[in-house]
Image 1 (cartoon, rainbow, N blue to C red):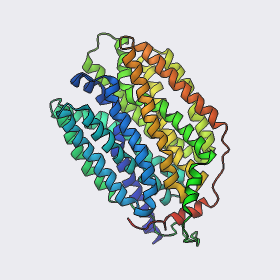
Image 2 (cartoon, rainbow, N blue to C red):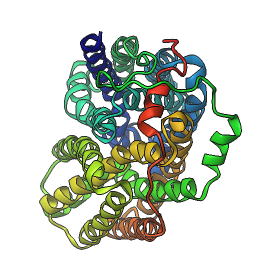
Image 3 (cartoon, rainbow, N blue to C red):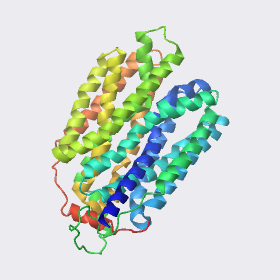
Image 4 (cartoon, rainbow, N blue to C red):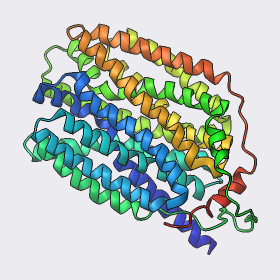
Amino acid sequence: MQSENGMNRVVVAVACTLLMLNLGTVYAWSFFQKPLCETYGWSNSQVVWTFSLAICFLGLSAAAGGLLLPRTGPRPLAIAGALLFGSSYLFAALALRMHSLSLLYLSYGVTGGIGLGLGYVIPVTTASRWFPDHKGLATGTVVMGFGFGALLMSKVIAPFLLTRVGGSMVLLFTVMGVLFLVFSLAAATFIRNPPALWLPHQGTTRTVSNDEPPEESVWSCIVSREFALMWLIFFCNITAGIALIGFQSPLFQDVYAKHDPALTKAVLASYGGTLIAASSVFNGIGRFFWGALSDRLGRCRTFSLILGSQLAAFALLMQTSHPWLFAILVCYILLCYGGGFGTMPSFVLDMFGARFMPAVYGAILTAWSAAGIAGPQLVAMMKDRYLDHSCLASFYSFATAICFLGTGLLLSFLFKERKAEGTALESGKSGMDSQRD
C-alpha cells in the first residue's frame, strides 16, 4: 500500500505539472502584443489590459478557490479551471473576429483569468499535501511547469500554428482553445488528495483530531502582520517581473532595432519570441531552484536574495544597449521572478501550517492580481507616452521596477521567520480534509 501511494503521488505530481504547463502559456502574452496592436490598430495600453485582467482575475479566483478547496476537493476545481481556460481562447477568437476589444477583455481577461486562478491554486496545494517531506522541492517543481508554459507557447505552439493558419489571429486562438481544452482537462482528471493521515514514510502516521479549525482562525492568519508583510514582499517582486514579462518581446525588439537598423520586422519578432522562450526556461528553473534552496536557507533569507540581486540586474538594464547583455539580464530577472512563486507556497506552510494552506495561499495570490495590473500598465503607459523615444520608456520602466524591489527588500528585513508548529502532522491531517476528488 505504501509503494502504491508513493507511485500515486508521482502520477499526481506529473498531472499537476502538466496542468501548470498549459496554464503557464499566459506568460507568452507579449508574443501577441505587437501583432494585435498592428493588426487591429489598438494601443499598447489597450492590448495589455487583456493580460492585466487575466492576471488580476487569476489572483482573485485563486483566493476563492483556496476557500472552496476544503469543501469540493481538488479535482472539480481543477476541471472547472481547465474548462474556463480553454474556452477563453475560443471566446477570444470570436472577439478578434468581431474586432471587439471589450469582448477580448471579457473572454481572455476575465473568463481565462478565473480559469487560471482555479487551475493554479489546486496543483500547488495538492502537491504540498503529497510531499510534506520536500515542500519547497515539490511546489517548486509543480510551479516550474507554469514558467515553462511560455516556452511551449512562444517557440512551439504559436509559431507552428501561425504558419498553418496563414497568420490569422482568429484561427490561431480557435485552434489553441481546442488544444488547451483537451490537454488541460486530461491533466485535471488525475489530480486528487492523498489518503487520510498520509505521510510519505511508513510508520510515521500519527493520530490527529478530526475537528475542523474554527473559521475565524483562517481569517486571523489573513489579517496578521506576517501575512501583510508576505503579501507586500510578494507584490513587489511580482510587479517588477511581470512588467518585464508583459513587454519583454517589444522591449527586446527596440534594443535590437537600435543595434542593427537593417533588421526586418519579421526577424525582430523572431528574436523577441526567442527571448520569451529563453526567459521562460529561467522562469521555470527559478521556481524549482529557489524553492529547493529555500529549504536550506530559509524562506525570508531567500526572498531577500531574490529581491536584492534583481536591484543590480535592473540597474544594469538601464545602462545597457547591447542585445545579448539585455537578454541575459532579462533571463536572470525571470529566474528570480519564478523563484518568488517557487518559495511562497512553502513560506505559507511554514508560517501558517498545512491546515490553512489553501485559504491563506489563495489569499496571498491576490498580490499577483494587483501586480498584474500595476506592472504591465506602468510599462504600457511609458511606451505610449514616449512612443518615439523607446530608450526613455525603458529607462523609466526599469527605474520604477527598482523602486518596487527596493521596497520589498526593506520589508523582508522586518520579517521574523518561524515554522508553524505541527506542520508535518498537519500535512497528514490535510489528507483528511475533503477526501472527495
